[in-house]
Image 1 (tube, one colour):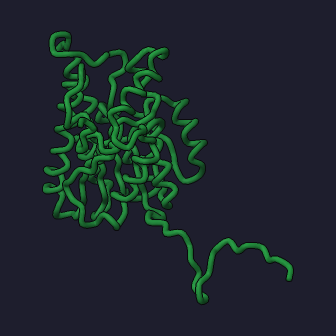
Image 2 (image 1 turned 90 degrees about the vertical axis):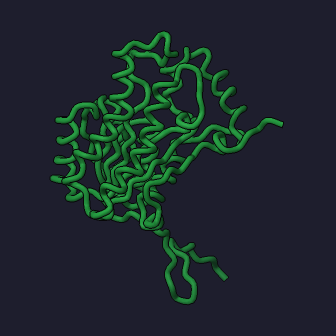
Image 3 (image 1 turned 45 degrees about the vertical axis):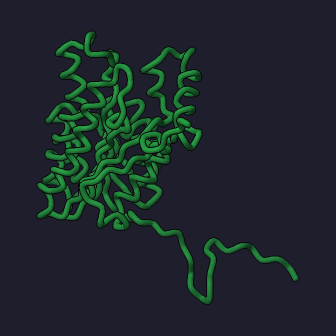
Length: 275
């Protein structure tokens, strides 16, 4: 008997079995979606059928990320600490795709040119810039998005496991991310009449280019090894790991999850390796 080509879709008793695409034609915006965790989130949302916008301040990285994503997404340059830029991001997205179903508030992290520091070395200006990028921008990103969000939309704030454990030089950043976790609760309450769910997704140590902003290149591998030694699963996370968790929170599968935090950190926060 000659062999037949394998069908693209498996069948069982006459029923076609296809991959479940949970976000088909849903419109998403991912701030800071041009690299690292943000790109991993955008890619995961697209793989689930979403279309929409990624944002960033660097046009060249936006162009590279859009090329990797393929059709269905546009890139809009903007600074999330600038209110006019935020309004432009959402109005342009709505003009292109219609109302927004998923907002991922990812932009944040290291302030360019300003190293994290202990309290004795932190200036008022540095404090304000870290809070502006990691807390104020999150609040106003949601506020500026409200006129463009569908009722029943999912808003995902990207927090950090740093909010749960102290690390040298990270006090201000960690405090901002702890406040972001609280924001998800308060904003969910504010937005209950519109059935908009706000949750926080907090990554642990994720293997992204951010390490190059924190430590000299020659020390990156050693620093990564130190992190891996503290992670119970024995490896660093990948942007795709955060992306898959975000896709779940964006979907109807998470419809009963409101105002909470999901820690995606390989057990680093809640499991101790000490004997």
